[in-house]
Image 1 (spheres, rainbow, N blue to C red):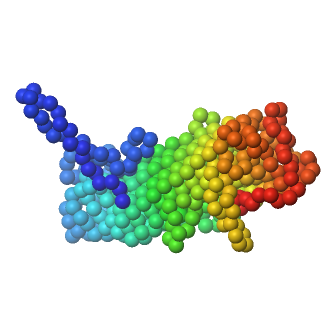
Image 2: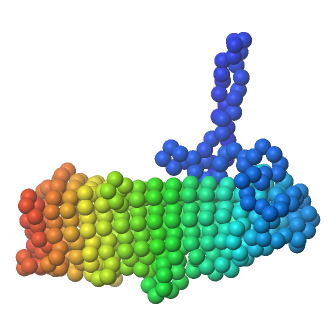
Image 3: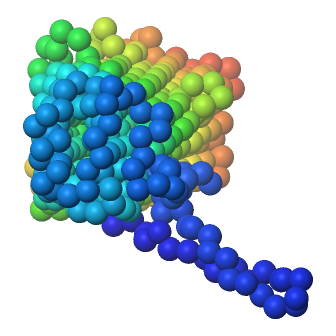
Length: 455
């Protein structure tokens, strides 16, 4: 649950020599020093707030009976302005808006939007029935809190489109947002908090067979305290900018997912994204295209049980990692496996990968803590990478890799310079990656000396 909108009391000197206690609201959701989620101030100082809303007519409503009558008569363009208070569940007709003073003042049991465009939800809290957007609806919501819903906080289906700003989903029964076969989702300055199954689950149900990947855009979004997955992206085209995924926990039945997981031929771009404290994998890219950081806007993956896993990248796909900081993770810093193609790592660092006890198939376990694990048949090109303080191995290559693989501008420090680059299960130099000037030679071993955490 969010921190209550408490106040800080300050004692200020007065001209008379006394003091006055001034209340200052606290920010419940902070993203790198900036408040996100529902604004702490009301939309307006009045009971009915319709400013800046596009309305053909305004109907002021003060109770459930009046709301039912207004809904029956509403047509596209109608704005229903709710007085402070509590209301039952609302089924909005096409193009009808629902406006309140603030999420602290106006509470609605649930809202269903069945179709049409031009509708606006603003200044309300939605309760246990959550928000359902379906039937090709195109909805805008601002300053809305969805709190303690019984199942998913927000559900998008049927090609629904949602633009969500300065809003938050808090402590639903399952996912914060479930968006399957959506039309589009845009989130700005918003928060998803304490979501037991996932913060956001966005999916094209056909995965790699989807004719077009639905767009998902997040800018300045905080995802905190999700279970299993902070963000699960399946068959979608997603762009995340200046957003944080924090404290991803085990889900129901102790399921371990990822802070951010992309699969099903997703197309993912991450710019200035931080993923911190994941009970499972920090970042998982599976059978998808991904830009993991760009020049001047890299990514951070830190304090996960395992850092980054890149796997099953097909020949028509590619994954690039630029200006990434992979820090203080267990088991592995970065894994590249599943016969992946076209994986590149540039101007990045992997630091302080520590050992953890990793279960091994079909049975057993091993203490593993490697900076990079790179499995047979996967193509990787490294140009500008620093590895330091890896507890077990620095770079461990398991089996032969494609001749197009290459390592340039590698710095090993903090003990990694003594570990070097190890490749097991091979004896031929043609099976090793090409190394550029100043890069330590690959030390090859025929025997399988080391177990891997990399799947």
